[in-house]
Image (cartoon, rainbow, N blue to C red; front, top):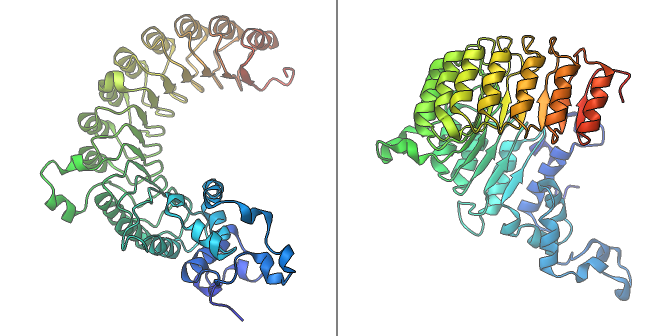
Length: 442
């Protein structure tokens, strides 16, 4: 017989779920069951610890852990993930009350393909709203990445109940639409970190029409998002990026990997509205060219991180713009930019002397001459990848090792590098991890 503290499995998992027939359940499904159970019915008042149900002699009842004060329990519970915290809440009434202390619920993290995440969010927020009706004032972070069953309904719950939300991660939730994202952004004015990577239906970030009407014509400034990850949002186009830039003017970190419909025009809008961007990735955006890099170069000293990997239309011309104006650049990923040559590396090395990480793998026109210029100017280089660079030999690597003593990672896979050169690098850069394909070197 099912007790009041144990919800029906049909409320948590679909009827066809294999976890109900093989006698086991996934961590995500068990977490949801425990969540629903403890919200609807706490343990009976007489149950203060599981051992007391065994009817042991009075002098043997209890457990050593019972002598810990509440603040000690709270410190322990603070290190537990959401699912473990839910399990603790089912131990006894004391643990139930402690587990629901608002200070422990600044973050909710849900994972799992079979998880009824919409229902889990509704149950959690309902319980967290008991002390402050209709709102969860303590909840600041919600992570539902890879919860493929998340829909707009779950996001509406977050938007309505979590006005203090600062961080939302929902990577891979491909059932979420623009309207639900707009609702979250409009109702959560403190939202700073938004990850919608892999949400293929999301094509824009903006306020709802109702929120826009209530604000001034400069309502775009009301969106406080600083970190935005739209990796694999394949439907994002220049018009959508224009809207994002106009509304999210405080952006400092923007990742647009594999947004294959973007062009140089979209980057022009981005630079106009978001001049404070520090990190930008347009990897695998095949329509981005040297003209796009000319626009990105207008970010000047703000830009620290740039990824243009596999942008086949980029050449030395675009890299020269970046080198000339973005002199504080620390990280550059130009892997697969086959138009990049030693001339581009020369401009980069002489202008961006504080460069710490460079990936020029699969750039067949980069040779030892480019590496020598890099080594003689960028002494702080810590990570270097020349994977599959056909023109690289041991001579260039030896110059790098002799000048960049802080080198920590060197990738020379699929390069024709002699064994002596690898040993030379290891002697001069003792902390360097060398990734190679030479079976004779170990």
